[in-house]
Image 1 (spheres, helix red, strand yellow):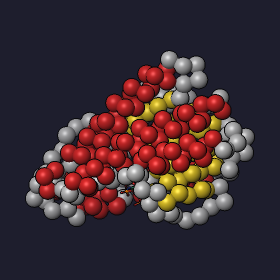
Image 2 (cartoon, protein in one colour; image 1 turned 90 degrees about the vertical axis):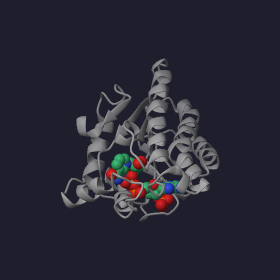
Image 3 (cartoon, rainbow, N blue to C red; image 1 turned 180 degrees about the vertical axis):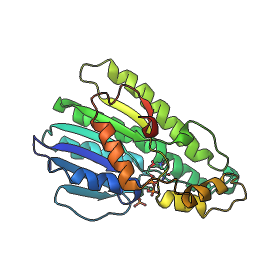
Amino acid sequence: MSAPSSHLFIVTGSSRGLGAALVERLLASPGNQVLGIARRTGPGHERLTQWSLDLAQPLAAAQQLQAWLAQQARPASATLINNAALLNPPGPVEGVELAALSDGLRVGLEATLLLSSAFLRAARPWGVPLKILNISSGLGRRAMAGAAPYCAAKAGMDNLSASMALDEAQRADGARVVSLAPGIIDTDMQVQLRAADPAGFPDHGNFVGYKSSGALASPVATAAKILAYLARSDFGHQAIADIRQA
Ligand SMILES: NC(=O)c1ccc[n+]([C@@H]2O[C@H](COP(=O)([O-])OP(=O)(O)OC[C@H]3O[C@@H](n4cnc5c(N)ncnc54)[C@H](OP(=O)(O)O)[C@@H]3O)[C@@H](O)[C@H]2O)c1
């Protein structure tokens, strides 16, 4: 898929919300090739490959990614953006189906780990600049009642990223790895939070207030900020970052 002069981007959660906005903006640059991964596909484009995959099965997805990358021509650079996340219905964990809890961790954390490993293994031989951008959350850095699996996935993503960044820093050809909180964005995830039962979710009113006060950023504006940050020469200097302070 990639020409040697093109930049390859892999974006998970590409079907809607922030991921769809990232893909759209990446495709606006003629030199970019994108692989999007989500359960559903979005609008097609000649430089977009889309995989309809459930990242709650992250091992199969990572194996598919590794095999696919091994068949691609060497691009000018390669970037993995782990953006997909699954929010369980807010509330204490005992009220959430066990399978849903498992899916939340698999999509939010295990997929990030396995796709990152597959990406590095397959892309390293190219000898081109590599980046991994993990879309985290402020909730990886502070606890919130009713969102324990999500908070755990994002906290895990932060320390996974920081530890991987240490590994990569020891290599001359090391990838740059960042876990980035994107701020609060007007997507389905916020709709889900506002629609949740306030019982067992004491922060419910805050999420209603974010929308009514206009505090939510648009996915398009957030994607633009994130991709500008990704392109900065100092990307990777800070493994755990927040776009609102970048
Ligand atoms: N929105 C916010 O305010 C906010 C705040 C902080 C952090 N974030 C983070 O920003 C990122 C993007 O969030 P968003 O607001 O755009 O969320 P969203 O609107 O809920 O979109 C989530 C994306 O993840 C994909 N996804 C979910 N489950 C999946 C699965 N099992 N397999 C494959 N793909 C799956 C969805 O695609 P399919 O449904 O088609 O599979 C969708 O493309 C997430 O990491 C989120 O945690 C968001």
